Image (tube, rainbow, N blue to C red):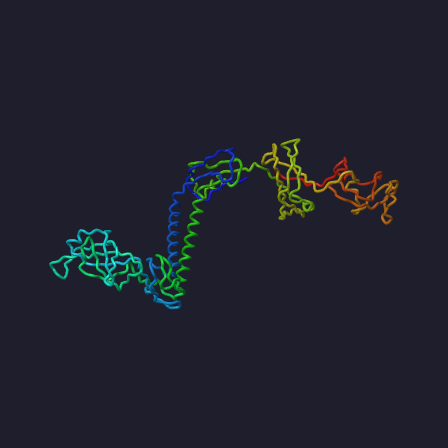
Length: 462
């Protein structure tokens, strides 16, 4: 059986089962209002998210990354160099597109549009390059105050021949620029270290093509290690708090711990569980009716003849005339001593229960060994453990023990014995059929004797 308890307080929202219902392990028995602690779980989850981000940032602080895609034009440091936070360590340029910013008369430029085609003519060649307008600035006066101009920025794909040392003029819709200008890189970044430390390695070479967020170099240092460890500790602490909050909220849903039958239901939907409330210790009771157990206390003289798996014969006064089979499922070595004798707890499992019910009184007989069609005599007939008193006219009297004095008409014969029960013992040698033995019959509990003998242990309640 299993008594279901609650580890939390609150109002019982659901208890969708009744007395006598058969339930399976894992079925939901009770749902208790958890609104008071749901906020704790959400707060713990947020703390984990924040701590995870902090840890990721701390762990990544060793890596110096580029913010743009392009070509590494130069490194300002080498492996082994010490760097300070904010120090420029490399330069990355996007040379795939070059920009040319030239002036046009405002009257014409105001009709230009972003994305419009433009022609670019480098000063040193007669080549005409195709480009597109990237931006058009507002009108400003030129050197001649009477002429208003607009600065037009044109993007020109770079096949590799254009550099910032070159200048060019441009033309849009047949309108020529008023001046020439040098090309500029589309993007150029001075990569800086976010933390102080020592350069442990350069991850790429100068001239390499990199993508945004690629690692250019790595930095090591005690401060970085300490920051990463602190962030890891904070993350672990947040995870433990979240796990605790999750375990706590899981207690508000109570599942069946075993499969079985509901035999008692003390708490129902709508009841309120309070601290120190006895109801918290006994919400309901489940009996596992798939098998029964019988608890026995076996004497120390017989316990060593028992072992797990042995069959047991069981009878109950409440079910007269019926015999049930069981199996020893456990033998505990922690015995109980009383009146100079020790007994040990033995558990018997009964799978075929028939009309047996929990709580019925029952007795058990455990057969540890058996023999058939053998000579046997009452235990009381043994003298000094291995001698038997027989009449002088018995066939076995020929083997009389001369050193022992017997009553007139009798002699003592030495025997070899085998298994025994509470009343009888097997005789393996020393006697034969037709021998007449003598003993005190008042010490024997049975009047009938059969050649089929067994050793048994009795007692216990089911």
